[in-house]
Length: 197
Image (tube, rainbow, N blue to C red; front, side):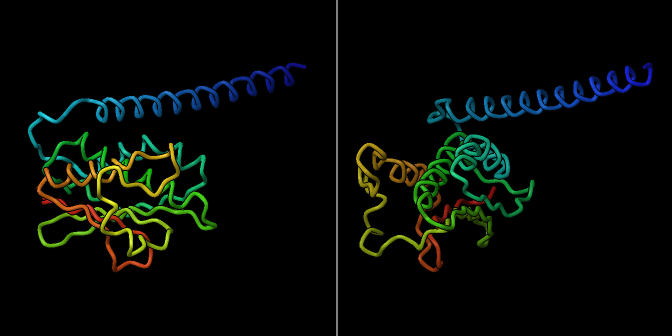
């Protein structure tokens, strides 16, 4: 009988430890989301440009969209990002651009049999290129010249304003960079080129 009670006590203790671990993980995840939302939502248009760690920008953006990727069963592939990689910019605006590109990629691949999004970082001289690639087959030639125009969208009515790419392009140009469609890829690729810090 004592042995049975001891096992029951151990079982309750193990279960309690497991549940505390789950709660702790959930609280940490909520804290990360709140921190990312605070960074993302603040009005930064009058902020000075600062040396910004690219890994932090990517991590905070992924915190905001990880649930959406999971719900849509979209595989995310992320190339390693050095913690020594910095760009000059406003972190909240860079998060806004990356979030827009990832959300567009989610919408583009949602109905495809193979659904993935890959984020790659590459150096081009002193410039840092952040590539958002998805499993789609690229932007049709007929649309490439228009996709950055304000209010132009290929989404169904009520599903897009056509402002995301236009605003993102303006933000990156304010950062002395470029936002382009990389036409050399087999899959859809948006390239954000920024001066390295």
